Amino acid sequence: MDGNGRWATARGYPRFYGHIRGAARVKEIVRFSRETGIKALTLYAFSTENWKRPEEELSVLWKILKKYLKREVHELKKQGIRLHVIGEIDRLPKDAGAELKAAIETLSAGREMNLTFALSYGGRAEIVEAARLIAKDAVKGRIDPARITEADFAAKLFTAELPDHGDVDLLIRTSGEMRVSNFLLWQCSYAEFDFPEVQWPEFTVEEFRKSLGLFSSRKRRFGGV
Ligand code: IPE
Ligand code: MG
Image (tube, rainbow, N blue to C red):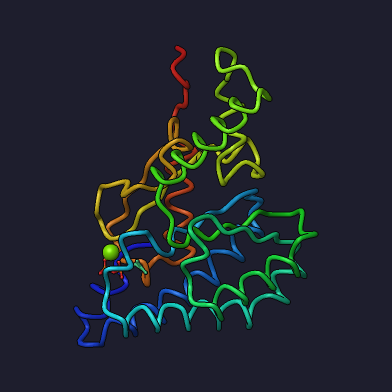
């Protein structure tokens, strides 16, 4: 979800207003995804690099997250949405962390769609953590290093409980930037990419439909012919 700040600045608003408008898009996109039958939606809301931002902007972001959860959790439950978080959640402010934990608990029975927030998330850190876990298993003799498969490894990633171990079908990055920026590096191996020019606050359901249309038109061969 990129471009909140630029969207606001270009219109003479402070950056935080872009985040507020961006959160409104999150609400719509989540609902639409569920209605349209998408089984998993992962939103990159905050990267490990985003900690470098000024304190005021960070506090607004956590406030928006708490508000979103408070306001939406009942609706999400009604819709059968399950919530996950990937990333270094221990680094989040205590109140935001507590709100997330409560929401995850409330939504734990959801079976219609998996909604994942990537918060203080980095793809390399996730892979290193999986390597640590596998190494521990090997030291304890629970797994033979010579027999470690891709599936064994994927089962140690944050996304292990998602459908197909979190393999990404379609990655959308708004704002015209054509970078992956440390997002789901392992899981994007065979992902299709879309880089719409619009900023995240402009990413309406209409724009999302365009991305989905593009995805439908792609021929996915997964290395075959
Ligand atoms: C995306 O918008 C939201 C977050 C990363 C929290 P940005 O804040 O990155 O907006 P730009 O890229 O500065 O325009
Ligand atoms: Mg950005």
